Image: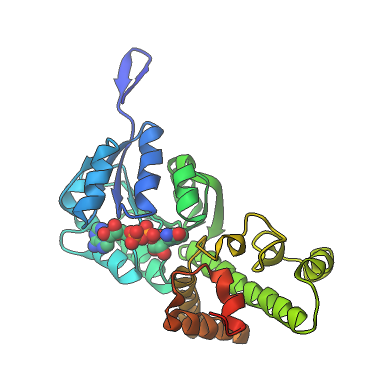
Amino acid sequence: MSFYSRGKTIMPQTIAFIGLGNMGLPMAKNLLGAGYRVFGFDLSAGALAAFSEASGKPFTDVGDAVREADVVITMLPSGAIVKGVYEGDDGVFANAKKGALLIDSSTIDVDTARAVATAAAEKGFEMVDAPVSGGVGGAAAGTLAFMVGGTAEAFERATPVLEPMAGKIVHCGQSGNGQAAKVCNNMLLAISMIGVSEAFNLGRALGLDDQVFFDVASNASGQCWSLTSYCPVPGPVATSPANNDYKPGFATALMLKDLRLAMQAVQSSGANTPMGEKAAEIYTAMDNAGHGGVDFSGVLKHLAGKL
Ligand code: NAD
């Protein structure tokens, strides 16, 4: 696709997208849909083939994918992989063109995000961390919430690139603050879901009807998102996974990944988070019992000894 403006044809910006998995592929498709030229790389031949079918241009290594790109976006599983993709001999830093904007949307630990952003700055690149919430559904619909860490200038450059994939884009401050916002939010979510589940389990043990307790708490000081938008008992909230046999939604294994990142941040920052630590312990036990694929609201059944 190209645009015609004042008598000359302007090629749209070229974006290199590294990591075309469950999240990356639909995100890249939304960029293609917005008129960007998108080059892609993934270790998986299947992911590259699906990207190619969607009219993306596939490459067989990182270096070739990023060489001509104005913007590089990564959507990868872990901090170690992100570090390798940026800093490796055939990586982004060694091959991206001068002035390219680098955006890491993977969910990784704050320390690695800051270390990679510092290395990027030393090489003369602007970089933001831009992790997302919204899951695979949000990635497909282009309604992800982006939490962005980096300078005001880098945030301004990143915003129009993120827009076709986003419902909301928030500048959270310096490098690493996007990841910080993501892990703090998800630690809070884990704690609140466990709290709501414990309250329902105690209510049941005392003979209290689920709907009656929901009607009381959702209009009282116990009100929160885990109760009113994602209620862990079947019935009160039609769209919650509890009404669909606890199919994700947001799988326990993914919640646990984020909780482990939160606990890493606790270790390196020295913050006092006893409830977060307990939540990580509970979700670890649920995952160890073989329920990593169950929605995280299934913790209600796990706590009741029924899962
Ligand atoms: P995924 O496993 O489906 O995709 C990751 C992709 O990265 C895979 O296709 C894999 O082949 C590729 N990859 C791995 N190492 C690579 C390398 N060295 N070079 C190139 N490609 C490589 O995972 P996902 O669900 O798409 O998640 C991606 C990131 O988004 C993770 O950090 C995850 O925590 C985060 N996230 C996921 C969700 C979700 O609901 N799935 C929600 C929010 C955030």
